[in-house]
Image (cartoon, helix red, strand yellow):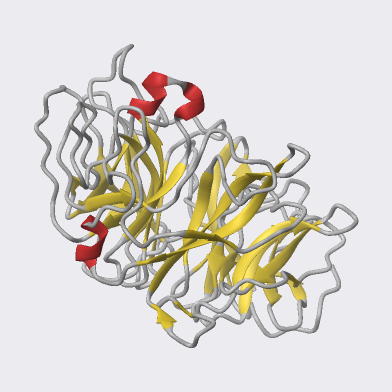
Length: 426
């Protein structure tokens, strides 16, 4: 195995938690946010993993900043990232509910999600900020998390994080009665339902977040039918004793793009006192009834390419954060690892679906799903690699991650014989 440093300049290089490789496994995309997570990067860039050459993909203007860039898994070459407000001022600056997604192609950025904050609101437009945009396997739909400006203005307690989808149905134009409103290239809807006060002991949630697409082509349901598109996410439930318990939920999505424009029980676009609501037929289903999914380390739910397993992190009986999997049909979670040290990073699947990668005991590790056998693929270091991103290349031959070197976050890959190896006990 060979660990290779890709960046060396005095800048912080930040990878997103997944989809950071170009489809040919030749480039890694990143932004320049500092470790304290302030959103101050003015460019999104990429580095060639063979030559070490960096290129600017897009530079923001008018005082805006950009970051959290991901790459389409399919050609033509496209990127998507968060874009902060242009000409920010005291009343409107970067915040959870003041940001948008942009799709970047050939150096041009096109806004993904329209924004309409003036009633009557527009179906297909959002009313706030989208975040961490992830393409589906076809590169057509995108998922994101969302916070709402209209509800934020009413009450912080009503600005609940939710999960949404950008659908290639049609572009959305809004009347632009407010200077901070804009059009979008995709029809955007929320697919989760939240409430500020979940009933204790119920399946209601106050927050939906850290979502992931299910499989490359969905998953097989209990009745044998194939569900083409679905998203899993973490939802904050309230136990009977009033304790917050993060659990796993799934939402099956329509296959036809036109179905996303069909309103359900409440308006897609929301009202002055209600969050935007999911399209007809989308119902979130609770999958776990557990001690609670781990919130530290922060991680996103990911699924095997065939859609049969959802991976997530949860403490074992000793309080050690281990890797678990769960069927999208529900049932009991299965503990995969029995490590002596907690997993301290996001987790991502190998493209073939047999292995996962993560950080534990200050090393990048791989784990065979069937056996739970783990292997160090980087030497144990005095300071752990960063936990924000541990991402396989599309060809399955490399893993990208980052480390702090001389005070700066630098990008690395590890390559070589990453998979076959005698078991590692942890």
